[in-house]
Amino acid sequence: QLQFVESGGGLVQPGGSLRLSCAASRSTLNYYNIGWFRQAPGKEREGVSCIASSGGRTNVADSVKGRFTISRDNAKNMIYLQMNSLKPEDTAVYYCAAHWRPFSDICTIARGPYTFWGQGTQVTVSS
Image (cartoon, rainbow, N blue to C red):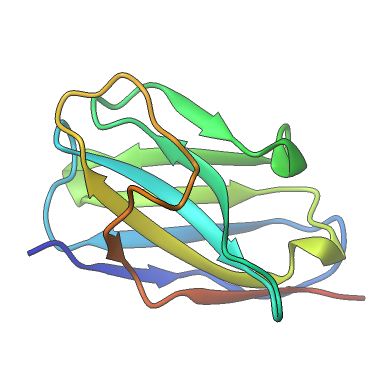
């Protein structure tokens, strides 16, 4: 059974940086696509970034392109989201998610395929 625990959220000023961590209960490499999603109050959950199960290919939402980077440390069963140049509109609960997709070279930030979800971590960007 695959479970996630997110951490690293908090309060940060505009222009600041945070690194979110997602601790997986088992290895996801080669078998699961992984995505980071976020949900602001009153809004739909939206995809932020993803990384393919084979380990290399990533996608990012246009709204965070050039600012956010997803990465993986397979030895530690960890997935990260490095967030730079944060804006107030980045304020949301951030979720780590995965779905079964063995040996995939591609991933999607659409919510539909994802079946395993963490509980989320709050990110607040405010001056």
